[in-house]
Image (spheres, rainbow, N blue to C red):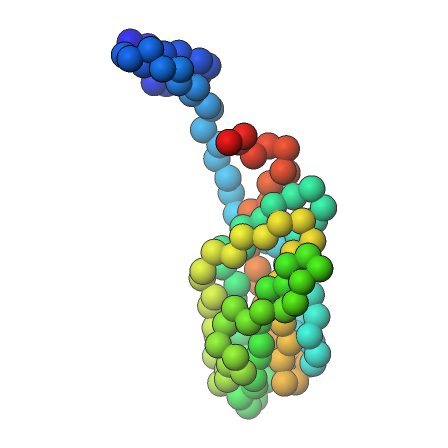
Length: 137
């Protein structure tokens, strides 16, 4: 039986075909940074012909008083849907970390806003991958 580290096609003990792919290593990257606006707007828009996984979003209230923030996902051509607690209150100097994976397709959008513009900083981290590089099923 061939070693599993060899790439290409082989057969198992029963004779079924097995395809061994080279492992793909991914490194998370910065998908977006900025400050929340006072009305709903885009924080990260998945590019055309790409898929994305947002793995972490961090928000920090830099204001001297508590603020309310809203966080959504909007599918391409769809309606914005809450992905964090509605009207999330963020104390002065506090941080909120959204660490659930959000999978996005082309044109899908992470959106948000705050009760006061330019007082909540954010950073979005994750992966982008061209659709043509995804394994075929």
